Image (cartoon, rainbow, N blue to C red; front, side, top):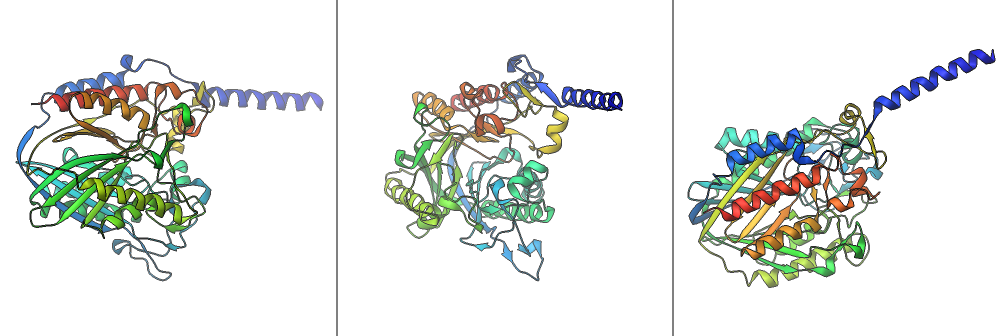
Length: 465
């Protein structure tokens, strides 16, 4: 009897060891420049680098806005009209996919279209956690069919509020943060995004545009390493005015929109919502907010619960109102842009510093990251890169400093329509923390690879003549 039990235990042990041997891989430390994904992406960059689409001339501006505030009705389900019986919020696993209990403040998707000669660029801000990959893809398909614009014309972001619409992500990890997947929510959001883009393009008319910034150190901190790290405290503004009188402003800041914790079960745009609403009652017809390089960066505020959101949002709005008056707008500008599709390595979801899940298991748990792009735009004196991630504010400072020496302002924004986790400084890769361990998805080569590609893009776009 004892021998039989020992044999059974031995078999179980062997099976467990075999499973672990299959389920766990060692982290791949191959330098990115020796990888196939680098070679393919670099060849793609070389093929487009000589044609950044420089355009100089009179500027036309168009604006669009649609609501993405869901209507919650116990007896009505009409997703095409944004009517749902129940919807989860997105942002925190601690909510466990529970449905929202109500609406604290309204959510929107907004667009600013900029046209110089025949070149059109549309910037889309959304009161969402991220721009979901499936939503961005479906929106572009609809827009291309309706007005002919493609990925090269469209530049996404989100406010990164952790209290917005969920149900847009499949996969266990996606549903952990955004609730049970509902394809009808994806269709509705895609519809609203596409309509907003089309509205902005059809609204194009002569205008003037300008760029400015101010520092807001009291409202942002380094949440990854505290005082041992650096902080990007730059609040960047783009003021756009149609000659007919309509005024819009786009703002970007690096503080995470997490003033509302998982205790909040009402839909809300967090502090970016307060910022937008105050500006829209103080001289601007439309205000839109893009999450900046929010990786490693958190907010600093005062008060409790929603007062904390109000304090930082309205204080930033007050500074925006003040400093936007100093911005010189121009009716003739120079634009250029490059859109680079990115190949990337296999998922390396770590369970310890040196071990990661077999990619087969990782792919079954994590959502599809989408079609991954980096985009760099020149908007006269501004060099702007959009990324598929929570991009680090520490790293963004490097690009700001490089571009400053060339006479440009620079900014890096997050959530451009795909999502590949956090991109943070390589020196933090071995740090056992949320951003550097759980949310660093593609191994030690991915971050320096993306940083290299951004460096190449901003150099080529800023040097284009």
